[in-house]
Length: 104
Image (cartoon, rainbow, N blue to C red; front, side, top):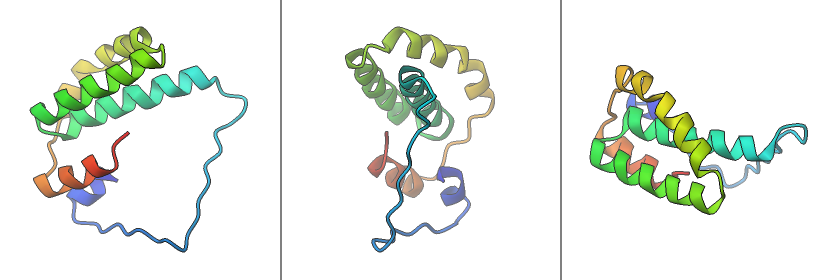
């Protein structure tokens, strides 16, 4: 969604629409939390200005510590650092502002 917004696509809130996402009961809930945290940090690194990305990273890692997934999340995140740096494209400030309102 952040890349679509950066390319000028519009997104709307539709209050008449109710969507429920039920994760598979066969998935490992702890692994899912790790992946969500890792991906949120990677999105920050890939698309946000560095000061914002670093604040976001620290905020998510604090949450990971409380959820007892800090070490696994940190290792997963660092493994993707070279990839994130190679693929980094910062979005415009207006898109960043919208993203920060709906962050992980």
